[in-house]
Length: 101
Image (cartoon, rainbow, N blue to C red; front, side):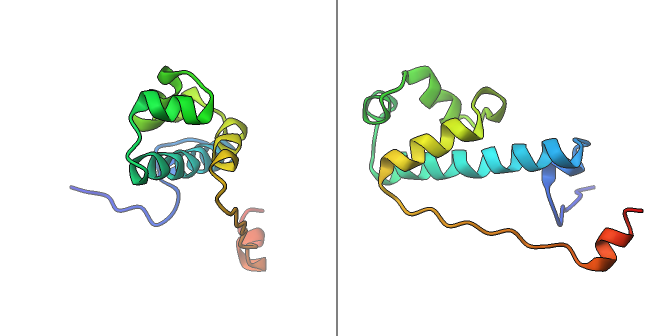
């Protein structure tokens, strides 16, 4: 039987809320770097040269190894692309906060 997540898959896997939020952010940032590499038809070697990093780091990104690279590092890579960052955070409702007590 397949379970469909309606939130953070890392939380569904049993990570605490803080760690699951960090892992989800890293996975998202990693996917954006991967999209950039693929959109520009870069090999791992060319991508490493573009970003000024080693090829194994590109391999971690291409293979979704979120535990290997920090969100700060990924933000730095995305900044090098010249793309535009957009930020959002949805505040919880009062009920959601009250349910935690």
